[in-house]
Image 1 (cartoon, rainbow, N blue to C red):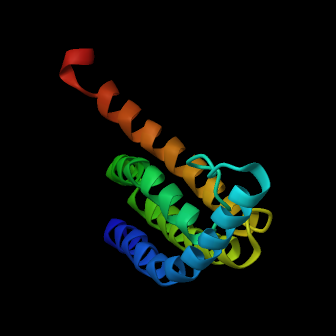
Image 2: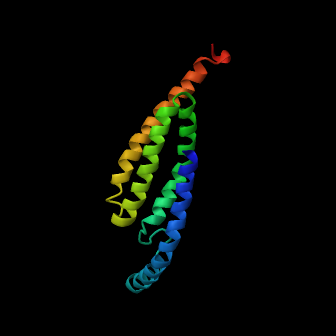
Image 3: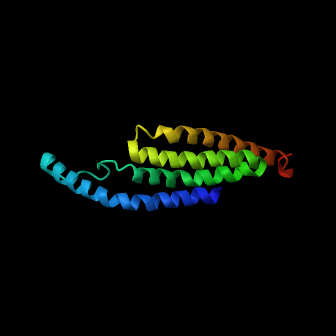
Length: 140
């Protein structure tokens, strides 16, 4: 499941490369309008949002956390981890689609189930860590 989640992150980056070309045209018009209105170029980060790019950046930020908590949770509770990982995988697809289509206001369609899955994975990862520490000879 970890491999699928990493592949999903990679495919998200491939999908945004197509949208980036269309966004460059919007950005050129934005730079021109900003220069016309304010007399200066926009500051870095002051550009319009292009949805799919933010989806990928968010995914890249969260991927190390996903990998760690899935790995830890799978030590003691593999079946629950598998179910929560599938929910996380599907919710990331919904998050990407809803954010790209409807913008930031619609992203909660995929964000909320993903948040619940992540909370469950955190719980099981802490449970696994506690179980391992509890029975380790150095901690008795």
